Length: 243
Length: 230
Image (cartoon, rainbow over all chains, first blue to last red; front, side, top):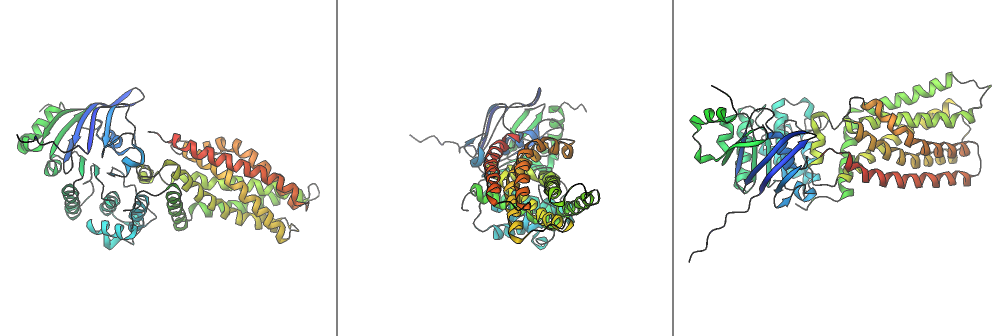
């Protein structure tokens, strides 16, 4: 008798996740499961609840209902959960007066890395911005700031990576560096959740795909079950766009 | 990796970052220093020396300047985190929320002490106060003791008001009532020192200040996590 292989424990898991802002429901029963080395790409129109979902998983917002866990820690999970998370959001989360190195080193120190300066330089190097390490962030272009922001989010090699439109503002070199960094994190066993409006970008890296509308998943498939050629049509149908 | 830092190590990291930002921009300190000198000058030119002696007026002037110049820096404390939502970077870091408060408060304390370093000699010079080094050191000690409580309250209210549209107006409105007992004790102790009375009287007020410091620092550190919208 052969033992039945058990699937790897999910790094990110939600069951019936609900988040309300006063009487407005932003997340309305989201179920998801992302294992080590997997990437869930979430598409959806503005206001679908994508960013709220990431902020709940990052520990910035508490769930109003249902359950959620990251890296085996139930949310709200405090310090233990946040230690495993790297977040890239619409905002750079950088201090304009500090240099690129100082910004990333600051994040490294808050994560308790043994060699914060070396870790910061390594992260900046991976994103191709080590040459700008001593430049104040306020004088960097939007694209370079985005790369520094990504270095800040990845400096502690998180097990859970949450990305909200990470390719925005990046040129081809920056986008390639980000893709390489994401592939590196995936192959290292990190679980990724990528929110984007760009179907091609999402499908290129995803192992699972979801479409969100009005706070819930209206489509949730494995990436290999999706035909990229017809996905745009499926997406429009899922979010209720005619034509 | 050695694991997330403890509360004091994280607080120091945040304070050092805030002080570096302030040193680079000097935005708040220069404003507060200019305010200090201008306020002292306005009090000087509206003062009638035949009606009120310098020794009677100076403590009040000093504490009015301490209070309002300090508010200038406290206003910026959390406002600086709003640009590009840097505050989110702090809140997703694996540190206790109280460390964010303590780090901010420590940086604010250094800021306020820097302003006092300008204010004390300015008032002593403008009002030609006959103070020895001992008295100046005593006033500095009172100022430090009072600043701890002022900064604790001011940092908490800065966090509470930063997301409101009228933050710069709301902060003094909310914080000043809590400043009153500290400013009262500080001003009373300063009067005794400037008048050249025995230091035992000033020490009694110092004990009151230390008691307020303990209560406000603990209460505000515990209350801070509840100001964060989650």
